[in-house]
Amino acid sequence: MSFVRVCALSDIPAIGALSVQIEGEPVAVIRVADGALYAISDVCSHADVALSEGEIDDCSVECWLHGSRFDLRTGEPSGPPAVRSVPVYPVVIEGDGDSADVLVDVAHPINNS
Ligand code: FES
Image (tube, rainbow, N blue to C red; front, top):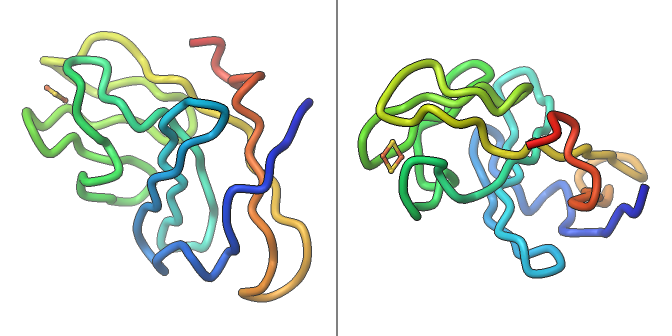
């Protein structure tokens, strides 16, 4: 594992996404309603648009351009037009409270995309 600090926990909206670049990879770090964090590729597998600009609902994000919805745990699209999954990366939080650090490992996607 090669985790890299990407932001403070307080940089991420309570329910929302922060777009970051990690070792040249665009990554969306997303916090959902129950406080869980996920990190997925910030490029839709259908076309080159940012998933971080999509709508977050439960444990998924909807691509704003054509509406495919991606599961934040698996990267799988729920339906067309996207047919390929997007990489999902491991995330850890170091420290306590909103000043905690968020670290992501883009070298080891957890879904092998
Ligand atoms: S660009 Fe994302 S579904 Fe088409």
